[in-house]
Image: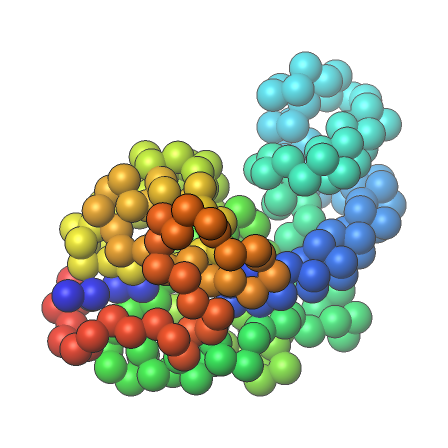
Length: 233
């Protein structure tokens, strides 16, 4: 019995190209100016301090901090400071109408169907919590954030580590065998499955997995949870 659904975003609910081809370049281009203009604001300065402490940078060396952030961005490192600052920059982009978040056509009907059945849906993504909220508040279909019960980022742990999913199960008060996780990354699904979570791999931008370690589908429409009798917390 599936009593909760956890979904990834990029490559799963939305296009990997939108994230890597639109959002990432937008943030990278604006990052130096954004940091320079906002370095003394409480939120930004706190993340710059966090970045500096973890990477051995001088707290007063703004140039080194920006260089480190750009290096992390180019290497697509899931660094918490980078993710937080990217989210702030994207918020400006959404507010200015620079772009709207991409969702595959099959996603919203499925989310509404699961909600109508009383099935809570959560998001687990490497993007910061504010970035996730901005994503679902600025879609072509409007603000869809109400379709989700909650959001998780890498503060619960890296997405390829089993303990992260154990923490999520604890927070949503569900055993693994009552939960479904949707992602396009086999290693993430492996980590979820280690906790007894049922897994579905979305094959959209990704290639099929020759090992077929997880149920593979090309859209949310193909996901069958069986009888949606829900026992929510």
